[in-house]
Every structure is written in C-alpha cells, then in structure tokens.
Image 1 (cartoon, one colour):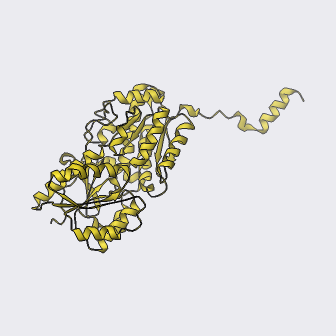
Image 2 (image 1 turned 135 degrees about the vertical axis):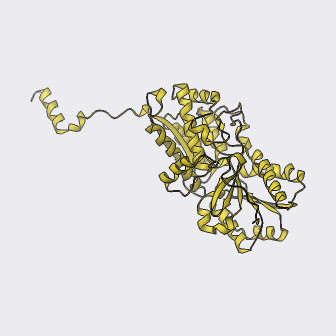
Image 3 (image 1 turned 90 degrees about the vertical axis):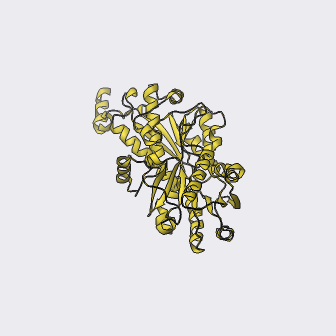
Length: 404
C-alpha cells in the first residue's frame, strides 16, 4: 500500500482527527476566586462564588470583554479551607498553574492577609471584601480593598446604637464585647476598647474572645447575663460558633440588644436554626447589602440561585468581577500588571459595578482602599435582613431592641 493510501485509511478509521481544533484556552480571561468552600466558613465562600458566577454569566452573555475581541471570562476557584495555611496554599496553586489576570478573596481577613502576600509577590491584582485595616497598611500595590475598614465600621456602628437608644429614651452605660480572634473582629473591637466606648461614657463589663472553634458558649453567656450590659458587640464569624452563642442566649432568656460585626450574621440559616423571634432587631455592620433601588438585581440573583435574599458576599464578588471587566476594557489587555495599572486609574460612576455598591463610585486611593466606602447597617426584621443605614439607601427604618 502506498504511503498516501495508508494515511487515507488511518483518517477514515479515525474521523475525529478531521475535527477542528478546540478554541485556544489562552483566549479566555481568567479570574481566580480563593474562598472557603469547605470547613466552618464554607457558606460564605459558596455565596461569594454565586455572585461571581452571576456577573460572569451576564458579561459573557453581553459579548465578553470587547477590547479583547470578546474574550470570555472564566472562573478558577480554589478552596481556602479553614486555616490561613490552607488559604495561602490555595492562592499559590491558583496563581501558579496558569495565567490569571486578577483574583478575588479570601473572605476572612486572616486568610486575606496571607493570600494577598502571594498575589503581591506574583504581581496579580487582588480584590477583597475583607475588613481588617492592616490589609491595606502594608504598602502593597496589587491589593484593592473594596470594603470600609473595621475601625470605621466600629465607629459608625457605635454612633448608630447610641443614637437609636437615645431616641427610645434609653442610655447605654455598659457594654459586652464577645467574639472570636479573627482579624476583622480584632480590628473592630480594638477602637471600641481603646477609645470609642469610653468617649461615649460606656463601660466594658464583659470582654470574651476565643479562637475558633468555640468549645462551649455557656460560661460566656452566663457572664453576659450576670453583668446585664445595655449592648453586646458580637463578632462570632462562623456559623457553628455563632449559633452556639445565640442558642445559649435563647436558653438563658437573655434580653439585650446585639450589634454584630459582619455579614456572617445575616445568612438564611439563622432563621431556620434559632427562629426569627430571637433574630428580630439584631443589627450587624457590613460592607454591602441590597440598597433601595436594587430590587431587580436581587430578583435576578434569587431566581438564579434559589437563595431567599441577597447579602454582602455575592454582592461584593458580583461587583468585583465587573470592576475587573472594566479594568480589562481600559487596559485592552489580560496582563495582570496592565489590569493593576488600569484599576489604579479607574473612577467609575455608572455601570453595574458602581451601582452595586454605595455611594455609587468605584475609585481606589493610593493604599488600595475604595474612596467613599461606608459601612452598611443591616437589621433582622420579621425573619429577613434589611438595610437600615445609611438612610438614603435604606429599605427599612431601624428598630431599637424591644421597641414596639
């Protein structure tokens, strides 16, 4: 048989060889998501993933990144697990295996502090909703912190509860500080201890901090009940620890206003586990929450995911993907250094990214902090969390604990 005949026979026996080659994967624009997808913080990681996937689906449906010839955005997720070490390892894997244009994560501030060291070393722009002040106090050039920092959140939360108490003819004289030792909580509690509470004439009567996981909440709640504080500042960042504390609050019949620290306190599981009666009027300070006028956005999210409502975690990753997309359009490049430089120059006042986050502007200062970022106060009312502060974005009015 002649060589050309042999070749024809092989091709006839294997027609798949005639199929066109697959599209070049390098044409895809890759974003890394490092978040806890297993362990004690997995719920928050799952919510972050939902928000990112929703933004990616919308962008790709609209033609992808137009400046890059319609490049599709693809998500490369990595599980941060339940420790800083696992989060750092996940970031190293995600950013080393293939070309990543930008990254998002890692939810818990303690994780983010480690992950952003990896991103900085590899020169990949990194976007985070984590709160800890120290994240953007290290002189890093590739870290962009979209949330207001913990110290600012503490100040606004305290002002709110003091004002609400006064309007309901009550004076706050004693406070309890209860929470874990993760970075965002530490930075929230620090100014309360050092100056803010004293400046308001409020004495700290309980100061209980633990390293997750919490073994037993009984002694903590008994101490709170025996000292009878007028307010509890509460920072249990993972669901199992938090539920344990709240179940003891319910068991001991503790009746005290609770001011939470973070969006972990407004996931739907709380209603199922402790009931809406206990949750009612509990407030928490977050970086983002659905605002007045965002009903259509929330509807798209709930219809897509089956979640009963939208919270900070999917809102932030939704915004982050859109911010990265806008930076890529400006840079006309998928190169991470070019993306970083474009982000540093961004000043968005319209579009999905800007309209998702108050006050409707996406601009980062020289430290990588979002200009104008302000805390959102969320309150449980009748089994659902609503934005109550700032007033101009509120979907409900705040209610003081016990007020009718």
